[in-house]
Length: 234
Image (cartoon, rainbow, N blue to C red; front, side, top):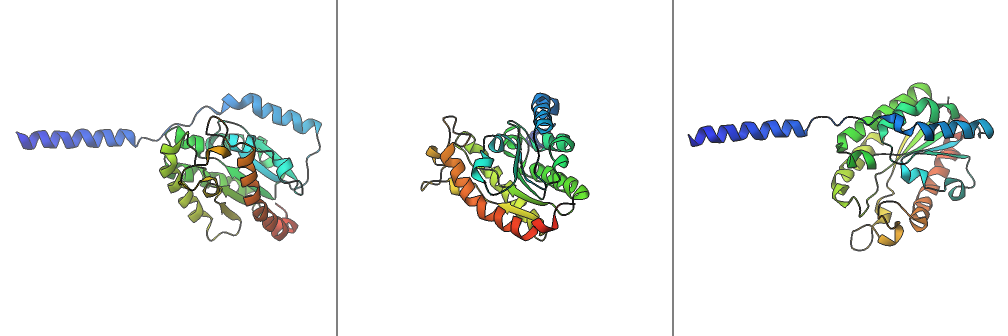
């Protein structure tokens, strides 16, 4: 009898584990229809630099004053808050490929993990994005910014670290890919995200936090731009 109960228990655990491993569905990308339309309207009224450095991703990109932070580089910011990798994939024809970019700075994964997606799922989706870009623009360099730590999502940091390690591995062996750890510079002496680098929500960076990011990313972008800009994206 006890053996039967034990077997039943194992079956139940197995079923629950399989249910928990069920792939998380992508959210409806059309929730960003207004933001994507606004980008197109801006483009119709303004000149776009040739072969720009494109910043794309979630609110960590959207709130970054990239033009002020990188005044010597031809920058375009196409961040839209709350987005996941799947959203950038869906809108790539409207927010990535029109610009013939030489360099893409990509930040996603934060919201993916918060929605219940695994580190491996984030990396798989990033791999899809990289493949999509390089199928059409083989020379484009892609900077993958590691998922940042935050007090608001501190419970997700272990999974974020797994994703960051996998993203770093993904970049090895391909001179078109660069992983940049912008998370470690945000940690204080106690190993926690420094509260004074974040807004009151303790999720998004404030001006001091973005200053840290900009100082860390500037030499990376300059090196890539000087080394590869003459080749231009195809």
